[in-house]
Image (cartoon, rainbow, N blue to C red; front, side, top):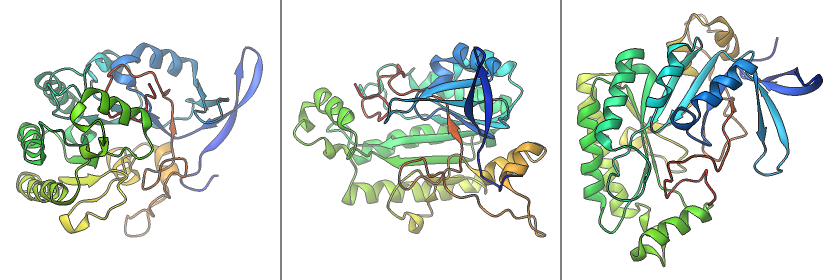
Length: 318
């Protein structure tokens, strides 16, 4: 038996030929594209077939991920409504990372449905599957000339007031552009005021402090209604714990074990609890970017395929 958190491999057959495939217990679907919004039919076909072929974005070489032993899925999306028909017949355990930003009429997310529609979808998911399985992301937090820190705070607060009772976790990050040339170019083309320095869209100094103080107060207020509500920061190099904001583990062993304790295969992957009912945290996934604390999994999406057209997106290079 493999150690907890280790991903096994198995042989799969494709057109009579044998290939080695990773066989993870947890599937990420997906950081690279919005599968629930655009690729529900594709997902059903691949799930039925039992494997996904993926291209390594750095080497360009194909590799394979078996879905046959998958015990749980984490879906990442900005618009899961087209996926509802898939979920009706989906028998695996899952939870959602639902990015619900409030950037209507800014041009930042040109093909995302308007806020009211997305909030309705969020609530419908929470009513159907439970508020602890629908995680709210406001990601990334950024500034524009017409959207200073105070306006961003107001936009976040508008959503927060409508989601109380429908989620138990909020995940945030601040815009990162250092390694994302295409995102810098898209922002500069859309906003001439920041064309010479797109990093002006990144909240720093007093602006960041204002936002973090607001989030700290938001968490305290929300916990009056739900003591288990938390705000976490995704893949941020800074320490925000003084604001009560812990580092996020978006693919989260603690959450998975709490949600699906009767999933035997998943529990074996996560590891046995000690005499006091606690599990040793799994190691971070070494295949992810710096400061990401997700547990080991395999992502089945493809870069440069998402149609939302978000200007800040790192997953589209064009």
